[in-house]
Image 1 (tube, one colour):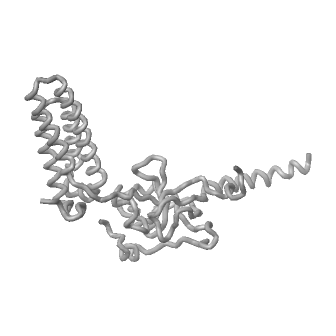
Image 2 (image 1 turned 30 degrees about the horizontal axis):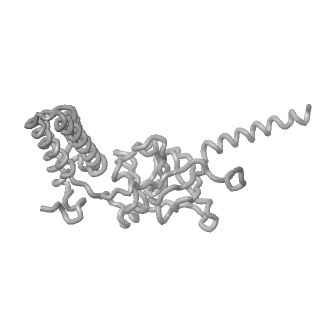
Image 3 (image 1 turned 180 degrees about the horizontal axis):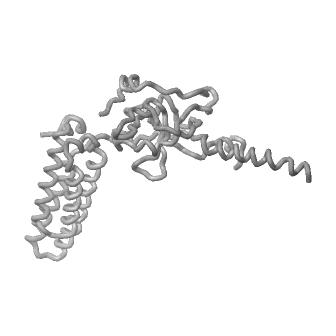
Length: 143
Length: 141
């Protein structure tokens, strides 16, 4: 409805924006899903039941998708421009790791899954070296 | 005909002034809480177009580097070779340069100069010194 008030109401909205991030990040989340992928591939190889195998493929693809999601969140929410100065290959590392997660999603290659784990470990090192355990976990990473 | 013809000049002049003013001045409404306590959600502000790089301490409007079409209102924390770093006055509740890095100065085209709504808080929005900003926790995290 047209009112005098709406006449003076700006149509241009500017955002005093906040993502309200929970601030909790840990590459372990991606690693656990990636370990699931590896274990599922091994179980797939050791069983001839077509139904079981079909389930393995389904679950593995789901887990691999979660790996990509968790890596993405770390990449664009946890890591900051100043971390890039310390690790100039940060983008390259994440790009390769998420691509590797795609590979694990669409293949049944245990080697690819192991490679993904080692890539996540590299990211884990970066997270640790930038103070991740102290800054983003409530009481550090549980040992 | 004569009185009508006499009006054309002033009408064109008025239109010209209106177009000029519209390009240089705008009104905006604030959404979100990252500029508390300075700006409250729902505050309405007058913005003027910038014809120079923004200066530290000024409240500006800039495009969100992460979401096309969205505009942010933030304070300039620093302006240097890397670009313009923006910060919310409420750093604990603000997504700003800490998350998306510096912005190219030319993208920061508007400066906020005053609030005209709500009536009880009408007034100019002054520049604050970066020293004060840093003292209040404005340093990069």
